[in-house]
Image (cartoon, rainbow, N blue to C red; front, side, top):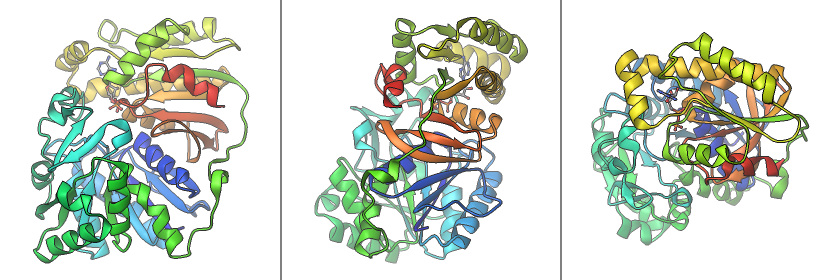
Length: 418
Ligand code: ADP
């Protein structure tokens, strides 16, 4: 193993793995803190579900993952969080990064969630989603991690015991050496973190190069783009070409399960209505797991055929989500929907579904846990940030889509790739 990664949610882990596989590294995503020997791969990514768990638990799991990766020979650690920096002020990015910096004794790490291909850019420390500031992008209404401040220096400062500096656009434009110098100066000046601006993939490549000798990198999947070249330059990574993304072939029924309420997913559901059999569960009208699961299983028994994919969605508009949360509380509302969708996924598998797309990070976590998936070998990319994977030991193809990823026709297009 060359690179050991800790991801705070499942789709984020897959997104990171996808980036590294495209860079010619083989990658396996392990679900939860590994207990046995690690799989053979250039990159092992431990996928946690720690984005919204209590701080102490997120820190403990992340440290345990780090120990396993270091014991497996990882030469560099990567702490992966969302490209929209999902975490409230009580959130986990700062505390987990603090614990990893301390464990590694490195004193400093960069922080960069940018993913230009998907419209996430950082300029003067401010995170943009498309043309909008983070806090005006829809993310301010996220069911679990509403983001109301786009200034990442401020956001991270509120979460960490250390202090946070900025490597700004003008420096990043000058390339790897300038970035490296600026990070060195911030570290010497006592900063524990640097938010590093990035607007293009070239910026991310330069940042990756500048961090070649860092013990820890924190960020979105974008900043990992530059890392394979570092390992190649050191003679540690052979040229693998496309073979890094090879998966066993798969026949069987196809389905989509959506629990994300993000704009992109809502648009994908709108498109799917006209193109595939679609069941939209009304969670607000029936906030009852057993009743919702019964409705979905009856529908699937009658609808799931051999021809094309079907879609089951619990997703709802921000107004409906807010209404359910007002009634049950935010966590209970999320948990109810996740439990429902996980049970539906299990039923899909008993009906012979072998190719499944799941929309939503938390939702994917719940589904993968329910299906008893231990590891995902990363295959070819469907859309930026979303690869097909081979789930072990279940033996099926899974695509875990972060809520805001993918074009309108993603649910249909996904199945053209396998
Ligand atoms: P994303 O990747 O878009 O953030 P997630 O699955 O991570 O999607 O988060 C969406 C959350 O919203 C999940 O906890 C899910 O259970 C919850 N959710 C889905 N549908 C509804 C609904 N109709 N009402 C309330 N919460 C919902």
